[in-house]
Length: 297
Ligand code: BG6
Image 1 (cartoon, rainbow, N blue to C red):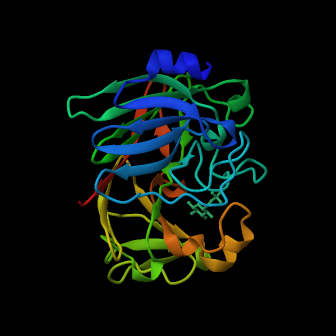
Image 2: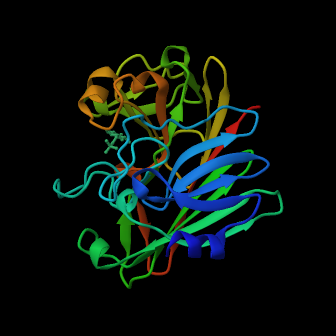
């Protein structure tokens, strides 16, 4: 659908319109009385969320590449139907294909709280079945207000059960990683992917001072990101794991789409169901993974 038709059908004055974004990819631009937000149809990828009276909450790499065959570095990529490397075929794309797929806009609306709601979908096609042989419907609802709510619902539309792993892989912007702490993980166990996956126990708050790649497996439904000048609560539902990731200097420099200094200004806090707790869906069954971002004004 071209931009004229999209705007004709789905734009909402005072809330939302559509325009060509970076790389010519189509994006939705929300600007309502509560917040601004941008979402690319490529990957159903939220790249910015800025509640009014607050700062931008999400980190987007200055070197991010906007093309149809690559995930955007930063914002909120969707990892689905597997998280990390494919469990049995290393040739398949890391973190699945949802973040590289073009999503369809199902609808837009304004809810009773004056928030803007976008509803997008992705269903199986020849392209997806070549990577994941299942019949599915994915629905993604993004609600933009003084909080940002992301709800990813998977439905099994086939006749056999299947298993997925997944993540809402949110990159949060921090003024300086040296002055950032993440609270809510004290005494929780985690798998340290920078140390061969060994099990460890979190002592106190999470402070990122080196490459960090952790899967917390009994994480509370909410944690708190505190930086020098802001505080954000990050809540989740339908998620067995929380992933905390920062590639640190060397790995960031090795990534072509990660600006070299970017690791000092971001941390990922991801609502996930990883390999240790994949979701098994029977025919017609659904599962929803939710993350809610609540900035403290
Ligand atoms: C995190 C993983 O979720 O994503 C890391 O735990 C991974 O292991 C990171 O390196 C980034 O992945 P990608 O594919 O976007 O570079």
